[in-house]
Structure formats: structure tokens, C-alpha cells
Length: 140
Image (cartoon, rainbow, N blue to C red; front, side, top):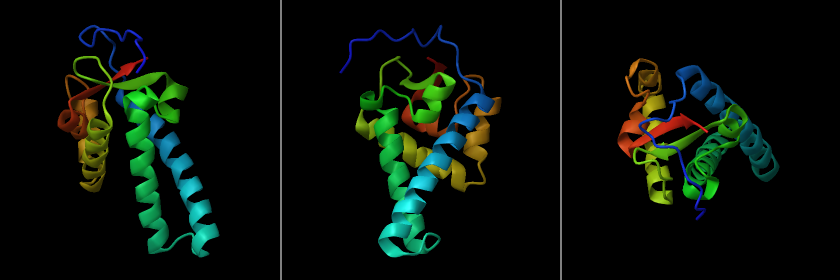
């Protein structure tokens, strides 16, 4: 793991809801296109149930990797917008913590996006998935 010093979370500027949402949209489009292309090649049915399952699996792997220390807390969308995910102590997530955040994100989305929208009104700018995993999204 890199010895890069992260900003103190208490003084780090938290990323706004719009920036976070745009980063997720960028990531979702990229993962969706790749998942659809691979599924189409493998099964010949880019819109079927198999494709949706494959897309969910690919998303879980993608977000778990990039939100962890291995990805330095930044997905490709996060890098484009100069934000990153860190634990509340300022360190990077391990794979288990990153996967827990993904599960929380999935739940946040399934419940009519309430858990995601929550970050727009929360004093610490945390969505449900951030609260579940003990994370902040800060400006990189």
C-alpha cells in the first residue's frame, strides 16, 4: 500500500452531491456498456436476465476494487472529477469495507434512490452507503 498522506478528514472538503452523482453516472455508463458488450458476445442476448446479473457482478467487482486501497479510493468517474472515498479516519478501505460500501450503495439505490439522495441533505454529506461503511467522499 502506498504511504501517500491523505488529508485529515475533519478538514478535508467533502464532495458535493452533484459531483458524486455525476461520477456515479460516468461509472455506470462505462460499466453498463462494457457489461452489455461482453454479455452480447458471450450469450447473444445483451438485454436479458443473464446480462443484468453479469452487469451487477461487474459493478460489484469494479466498485470494490476502485473504492479500496488498491484503487486509491477513486473510480474512473471519481478520478475525472477529482474526488475519492476514504474511511472516516482518512485511510483507504480494504476489500471487505469497499464491498460493504457497494452493498450499501445497492440498497441505497433499490430504495428509490433515497439512500443516495440522503447525501444531499446530510451534514457530513454521507449517503446511507457511506454511513454503513464509515466513509466520506472528499475532494482529492
